[in-house]
Image: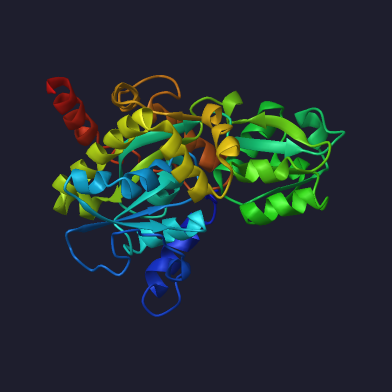
Length: 349
């Protein structure tokens, strides 16, 4: 699933800017599945959209396979990234126009100097990000002194820190092992670490260790992990009609999935590399947002259901745990005009 990263973004940002042309950027070695839209297209009218393994983003595959982009008059080069961090690097280097990424990562990008805009809420993680532990670990307090693996800077690292903080602990109280998400899951199954922070579908892999169980998940921290369609501000300014077509395509895809559940599940399970039955298990752990929920999320509020509030809280937390130097300015990262425009069109139809 997505290696949803937070940490070392400032470093990544400057390294990417410096070496994007001269060196091998990680994004240049990605594997892509672009279906009928050419992966090599340089057509300025084509939207280059990145996505990676996460249940809330697999609908993009449905949109492509079922011709929904074309039905909304937008040409899309849909690029699959085996590594989520690589997709973030690609967006920073403007090798793609938009990406599927978390609020946390977008804030980290902004704190590192990137100029990015959130135009859509895909979903909230409501259990598909998990801290999974071996037999004998029954409480968060039991993690003290234990080896805990996660990809450093990912939202699952973030989730781990939230859980530790809730019990009055910090990362210093555990032996943190930084591993890429897939490697972290494998290390846990092999018995090399005592606990692991992973997201679906790597949760399925981790839970294959005998006696393992979920200790806590994103369900215990509502609103802490939200997922979005994010573009560079440069692209939004130059191509508002294409951004609108992408937002329209998203909601059209959700409607299509409602009417064609079996085929949609087949497409998404194949993209995830799991069985349809396994994929269905992810449904409760990911809350796909409706247009009404999108409109509400963009409004000011005083809890984590408001993106503006959540962004402030996440920014504070990043500073508190040392993942950001200072509170990032999040006042310009939200642009709800596209979901508003879609809602208005839907009301009239």
